[in-house]
Amino acid sequence: MKTEKRVEVRGSHRHPLENAQNVGKADAGEHVEVTLLLRRKPGAVVPATLGTDKTPPLSIEEFESQHGAAPNDIKAVEAFAQSHGLTVVRTNPGQRTVVLAGTVGVLSQAFGTELNMQKTPKGVFRTRSGPIYVPEGLGPIVDGVFGLDNRPAASPKFRRRSVAAHSGGVSYKPTQVAAAYQYPTGADGTGQCIALLELGGGFRQTDLQAYFSSLGVTPAPSVLAVGVDGGTNAPGDANGADGEVMLDIEVSGAIAARATIAVYFAPNTDRGFIDGLVAAMHDKTNRPSVVSISWGSPESGWTQQAINGLNQALQDAGMLGITVCVAAGDGGSSDGGTDGLAHADFPASSPFALACGGTRLEATSKGAATETVWNDGADGGATGGGVSDVFGLPTWQQGAGVPKSANPGHKVGRGLPDVAGNADPETGYEIRVDGQVMVIGGTSAVAPLVAALVALLNQKLNRRIGYLNPTLYTTAAIHGAFRDVTQGNNGAYSARAGWDACTGWGSPNGAKLLAALSQ
Image (tube, rainbow, N blue to C red; front, side, top):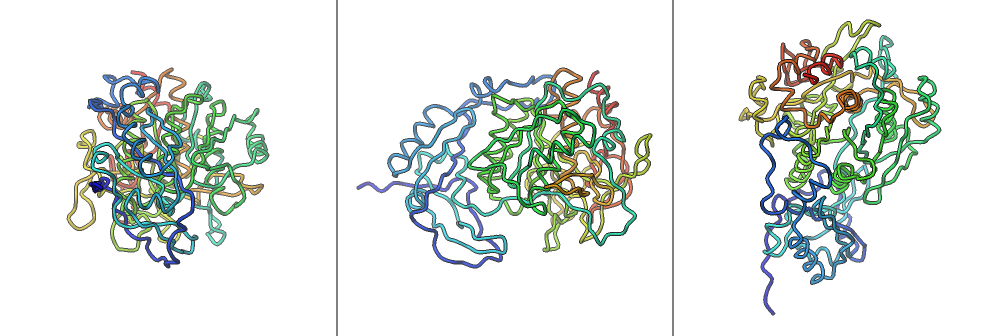
């Protein structure tokens, strides 16, 4: 019998789970689904002018035709599945995905990897280490294999106000923050869909009704739950991911009250993260024009195939005219790391994400009175930001004065965040979670805050602003529509005049941004 020649899936090498106890091999009979991400069809080219007027957005259908997976590539994966005793659950040429299913034993053999169980304080997870292998013929076709390992991929970027904190804090309704940032008037999100990606938690309609009624927002916004990879709307822990879900819905819904808010629930794994984002982008029913993501983790914790997969999805969103707002992190320039190095949070560090940093806002009825970098110290949290170790400096960011990385070697890379908004829990948002009213901050609040602004702008302009980064950095009128935040630091990086690695261009002035985008 001829031996099958196999190759590594590019970027699939995975390190063992840190600070974990091995508890044995994974159950060989456990049934598992995996997602294979395939290459674009040969000849498909991503426009170099993405994000400019020269490249209008594609419809989902146009994107599938031009950039989906090639039929022969899908057939090759299906043949591989058949020959290895795997079931083809579904194929989606537009999303470039094939979902396969089988037992742990069969999958391990098919992909040349061993799956083990490891225990951490957060639970017991199925993990792997080393690379994934596929037959040589699939090497150029398969960009990633996700789902064999189900360790947590990301954490939510929200912070509750500490009970022990000083009593001098203030709190705002989301509409008050929007007013402080002069969000466009005469717009309510009509005709727009805001997608929220959630990797846990859930919401209760009774809470949403009560919350929006308290703000005078009636009827309450239309909020839909969409399940991905078995993820569901599963509320139950006010001190856990429910806080993230409710923060995202209530901030975006209070400001863009007539937008449809579609909440995509997916498992907190690299597979769930990628599949959840892709599902939102390709949703032909809701067709979101903006996505808000408040989950992430340090770049160093991801496999290269997962970084590539999410980055490709964000690039695809740009081609579809979808703006993706991503929280920049709450752990300062270290992103919560303890190795003494600076870390950028991913996927905010992708050049195709609109990275959202955090400020401390002290507002008056006439607008922001003072605004500084959010930094409450090691225990209180601080805005993420810095320089990517993975992505080079984008062309459009070359004139922004992005500093060299604070890490040894002082790499030149993608700087983040791009924009910022109120995130300090001591000047946080009044939110209702599982029947409790609490004050929450974090850059998790800024992503939906900016997403709601995008929805209002799209409505007023009667078009999608889409991938905003190139225009934001290269058009003076656009980056002039942000309030420059020049005081404070997030650890390794300090605020300054102009763009900086704490708050980007600063906080938005919605009216000025609308005027600049109308030109």
